[in-house]
Length: 452
Length: 169
Image 1 (spheres, chains in turn purple, green):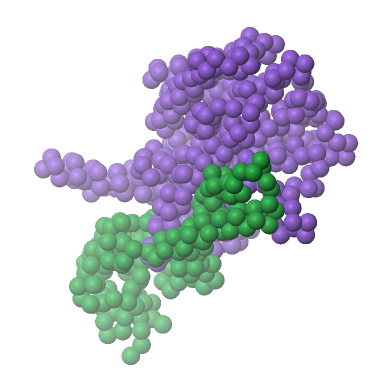
Image 2 (spheres, rainbow over the protein chains, first blue to last red; image 1 turned 120 degrees about the horizontal axis):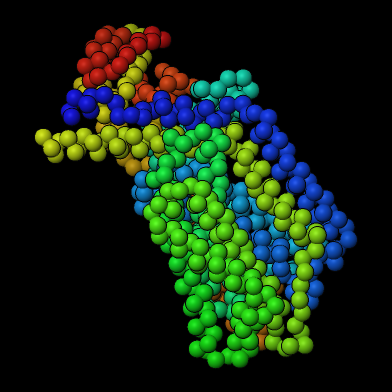
């Protein structure tokens, strides 16, 4: 046993570099066709948005009283997707979770592109998008300032901070890996990585400050991620509308965000692992752990659905009870039950350890979760607006082709950006995997010392 | 007497740390390391104090709190919105803005604090850097007089260096 330890534990540093850097080699034709397809859909969505700006919001299905529908649902959905990246990269970093190292870069990248997608929707939703800067506090010649009592202003601050801080955190983690890619690259890529690495060489001086700041950024990102979806939930909970006005919204939305986000990580990682040939880096062990997070958050979300119903019944407010009656059994009741099926019942399959490591089954389950969580937001946002205080105000809503095209475009925009990332930057953190090897080697040495 | 750079390349951070300890015992202090990963073992051997970047982050956080309060209180006084005679300053919403500003400036200061303290972006390579030090080797670069170089070389070899190069400059 002691003799075996003289040999380096497999895999060694070189194996990791080879596996990760191979992914970044020149892409094939199928890859460019896929990226081209994604950005074609983005272009169609862009044209529809241009038409909407020119003609006004009348081209959407938004009519009184349902003025918040698909666009705001997409906003909340994409902000929610972003949350798992920060959970995996920052919160699990603080807990020193070992399995996060192989998946955190992909999850964190997803965070950035998801927030970048979400951030577009408040702008798309604006009737006069050229006045978006009214949300920002700047010295104004009319002495007209944003009202800080409005949750929409909190939202601008929270989402802006989230995008900035997670981008800095991500950039920081990328530096040593880009330096590594720089040494292996040639041609224009060499110049590209040399510029991006900013002269990083891994000196003791650089690492000393880096390690401290990485810990600090993780410490700052942890409360931030919880605050962001709480603030998003307050966009609704601060209003008086039945179905929105609730004290449980902040934890309920945060749990839902992590639930949908981790499901989206799995939806992306399972095909990516196969297409990019990184089966040796992302093992069933990683998927098993991610699936457990999905299962846990699914149970939290189910609990929130039950609590919400109980609170409405126990409070005895007839108007709120009517809203919930319509939510469960009204014209859109089927959406609620689709959501219960996708978010509460199907994830229960993950109690089975065999299903957690069956990647095909896991992938299908996570697709259902994505659908269910989109419906959850739609049911809460648009569903509550259709049933107001006075039955005379009740009205339906149908999304127009503009809203549908822009929604599809947002998925294409997200997937296109993510696909570009996989070929140009290291999708798995080489630095952290190498740290994992050192940790493994030391643990083995301790075992041997104990046995001797 | 001219200065020489001795570069030792190690396969493991443990061995590199041993070499650092040997150098320090011999009162040779002018050296630096290159490593592909942050190593606690090397950091411990170097015996440096904790990075001051945490003070920069703290300054950013405090500045963020002050900025958040200044924006919210300042704009409320500039545009007085009387809502049913309630107090002008609404603290709960102001805390949300102040909190976000604290995180924002704390994060920005930590990031740029690292760049500043670590001397990035660096346009010139550090002396003795090799491409493998970003991939799979730990480098120890010692600057000494050429009279001492033979001794340093043998110390690095003894500590387990895979390869020792001497670079006269």
